[in-house]
Amino acid sequence: MLKPKFISAGPLALVIAHAATARATEIVTVTAANPPATAASTAPLRDDLDPATPPPAVYGLMPLWEHTGAVEASGAARGGMRHAQVGIYALTLGTDPYLVLYGTLNAYAKLGLKRTGRVRLALNAGAYLVPTAAESRSIGNVHASTFVNPYAAVTLVPVALGATFLVRPRLHLHGSATVLRTLSAAPESTTLTWGATSWLEWWANNNRSVRVHVGAEGWPTETQEHVGISFGYRTRHVAVQAGYARRFGPEGTSANSIMFDGAVLFP
Image (cartoon, rainbow, N blue to C red):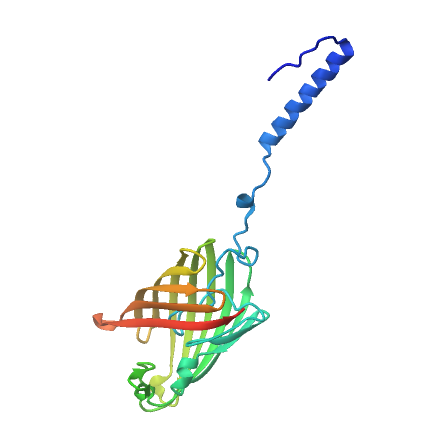
């Protein structure tokens, strides 16, 4: 450090000069030890505080079994192929329009138990009134489901606990555990089954994401496992997701599953 140069100074000037030098040294030391907070060091890891962070998904791609811990924002709504829903405070109410086209009346409700922070929790419940011989119903050459109930109508009542963990602002881990009660006049169709699923979503940017899906469902009646991959695209007013999954059933059987969903968003 450069020492102050005195041309003509008495003892009082020398004391003032030393005091100023010591004060400057103190300021430099404090500044180095306590640097000012930057936007990067204080940026919240929560989409409710940081609009630039992609918000977590409010539902999965596997019907009945895949859920998340996030709910629709209060006052927001969406209408699409598999979901028409609206957010009312902590509650999301909706239906699956695709199944309605095939005669399966349905409705679901999702309650946000924890809606902010890195961990989100939600409780999901629904009711699906599946008509007799649902497997025979089709629109053109498209079949809604391979669900087989040739002799009696069936009511499906799934109850699920979904969780979402924001690992990083662009990396979201979703998981759920589901209990599915099947009610029917036919005793052989009345069952109680369980399932657990998980999927990881990585956002390449604020619009595009890649997901990996794993899960097992239908235990203990007819357990199936699945693995899959899907891709998502989202803007302020459009959300589209599509993917492929491989299902593994009892006795080594397996089948392909194509997953698709799209919706118009009303934030």
